[in-house]
Amino acid sequence: MHLRINETDAALYLDGVKQGNLFVCFSLGTAAKKNYDGSYTYFEQNGIRGCEWILKVPEGEHIIEVKKFGKKTAVTKVYVFGKTQVELDVSLQDADFELISFSAEKKRFNPYNPGTLGMCRFNFSVTAPGEGMLEIYGADSRLVYRRGLKPFAAENAHSTWDGRDENGAIVKKGIYTAYLQVRGAASTEFIQSEPLSVAVDTAPSVPLSLFSTSGLSAGLVPAAHLMPKGSLYGASTCGTDFSLSKGFKTAPLFLGFAYAPLEFLELSCTTGTEIKLSRANPLIIQGCLKAVCKSGMFRYGALLGGAYSSGKAASVFNEGILHTGSLFAIDHGPLCIGVSEQVFFGIAGGELYPLNGNLKTGVSGSFQKGFYAVHLSAVLYSPFSSSGMQGFGRIQAGSDVCVLIPKTLCMPGAGIYYTRDKNGENGFTFRIGAAIYH
Image (cartoon, rainbow, N blue to C red; front, side):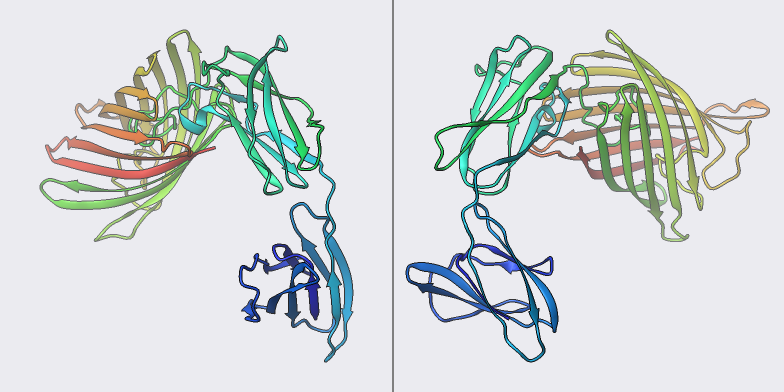
């Protein structure tokens, strides 16, 4: 198949499969550039610059599509007989300027959250080059923000609003209306989009947490913070556990997710394994449901969860088959102090005994400011059985630091935890990982 296209930077599709980009050639020589279906050369004739393709295709009917931003898509059906060559000229025509779509990624956001967590991104699509501006109006129809957009160089583009007015001050809580004004490169009149409603809400803050006193329902001490409604959180962590007397114990690897379907409810799931030197690596799966209410500066709630392990596991984040508990916290500005009381029944990898387990008492402190968060936590495990409490079990204390990378939704973190069991054995756990918000 021999094709001649009157553009040098379009995209060619054969039967719906992209054959590669045709890049603008700065040296219009005879040298051909290879791709996996054939070859093409650049040409210039009568002031027209284009590309000439030679494609090897099987016998039968084929659909040729040539696309370029600012041009109408050319679609041609052609039948190629065996051992023959088909000549085809494709000429792209200018497209009329149109606004195809305009949408907001968030219907509600908190501008006090750091980075892109505190912004609303508006996505839009146009058919040709042009320019435009984003306008935000308050409930009183007063213009609070206007931003000129970069010249459109592709079909899909975006603009963001950080919840601030034209003076740089964060706007008041409420509903705001966004409009997109666009026009083509050769046009003098703007096209206005349909209005979009966006809520600025300072209540649903995003907890910057990764390991222990986190927004997740699992961890050394589960916090009374919740992810905002509709948000999704994913975290991948790894580390090492070792004893001061016996050396290396395990290297835990975990992948966790959290989702908030309602303003007061959060679901989380964690799965992973522990790499050991002497035994098979167990499969560990944990799930938890957490409900939290807020009254002023106080937070209180409850959680219910369970876990499965194919073998005995030592990780500080794998403590029992079934557990339930309550949470309480005082939240004041960037500081949050919390306590939790949880009951763990059974031992992961063992059998479930209703009257055997651990009573876990935890305290935590969380400080979040801007792009970083610091967390401190300590827990006391008190074993119990049908005969009653058995005294001291073990104590664990730790700290982790998380940093949100500016202009991204990615947050790396690191943590260290100390453990002392009932036999007086001391140990440490190190963790590193990264989380992504959506």
